[in-house]
Image 1 (cartoon, rainbow over the protein chains, first blue to last red):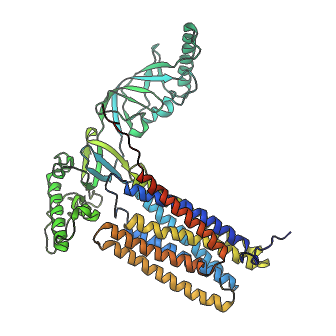
Image 2: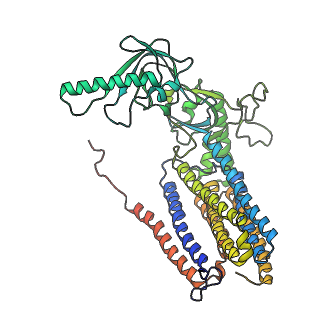
Image 3: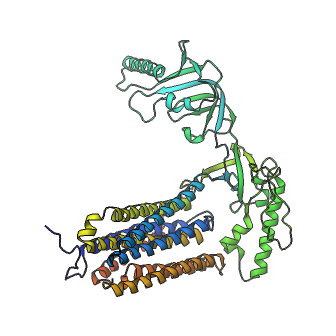
Length: 458
Length: 106
């Protein structure tokens, strides 16, 4: 049975079936993105921190915009070619459209990757340092005195599993342990299974002796038979340890007693954000063991230069406190060299220092390295949704949009690859399918037309 | 959209022109974002007006809403009502904030 109105329009609506369907679908998509855009507005209006403005790389966003506009043109040209029965041209334009979609996603992946590798560290006085962690961030915990494994009495979300959750973070050789009975063991799946079974048996016996219905948890203590040092990222622990902690707990509940050897964070600093710092000249960032007074001088010079430039340009007609861009020029120091140099020079708007790295080594860092004490760090994160609400809504919006790009590209690719039979038997129906796929593609472009200025430019 | 070969060829020329205009408008948007207006709010308004013009071109010409069937306009009218209500819901909720009196009083 032939489905009617797949090619010719229904007399009452004047539309063929797929067109009605796609417009209803696009109406639901408008609601989906509308909800997210309104969330963006209210997150921005209600933000209790300086909303990131001009923080995303405009060039890549601009190129992506041109790529999507171009692909909107090519999908229409593909439809027109098919209507004129120019099949080779149809295939060419459809392939270009799909390639544009792939280009968009590749560029997006570069943007995302750069953000995942970039970190923001908020100090206790409100100063934000941004940069990279060249060695990652791991706590060094050693001089281990004991491992306390808590074996759960019944099924529990947290149950001792040192083989998966603790041993991967031991530095150096495979450690040896002494059980409470004096036996020396290498902790592996087999030996831990034996320890766990014995602990459960003891717990069950105790529950029976005490007349308890539920089997309680049982703690097994293991002593180190050799010196053990752990090197572990804070995210692998059950809770962030306080500075100078004498014990840390892993995610399986295992508590390790010992001493914090090193919990400093080595950060290659590429930016200092003082907008949230009450006393900017007394910021922790300028401590001698962090960036030092030379960078403080560079900051003061930039701030004074930006203030003078604003006054010269706008006089008293504008309030610099009401300009988000000016606040950034005043209080955000971009660092692009290993050491600062005096920001003087002919015609110089040299707000940032550009001294080359000291030794001219191609591999030398172009940013100063600071070793931050845990006690000075309030919060740190890479540039992901965890960092703040801007990045949360940025990744939600662009991620969902990216998924729509992928889905649209797959549909268009399907139309160009698996079209043989329909192209021969009913090319007009295929043209309608391409038109409908193109309508979805234009919607994806339309969303990006709003996303790009909202997130990247304004 | 057009069905006869002549109409389709004419439509192709229009598509290419609109594509060019969209690219120019994108450059204009980027440039305008570097020009600091009296308040940042004004920059946002100008940016959004340009974005709406571009979106309008895509919707009217590329998605051929400028000569679509009435049923589609009816769908979109409902959509407009619902989206407006969506935005207004958030606005209305901000006019009625939760207030915990004496919350921090000890």
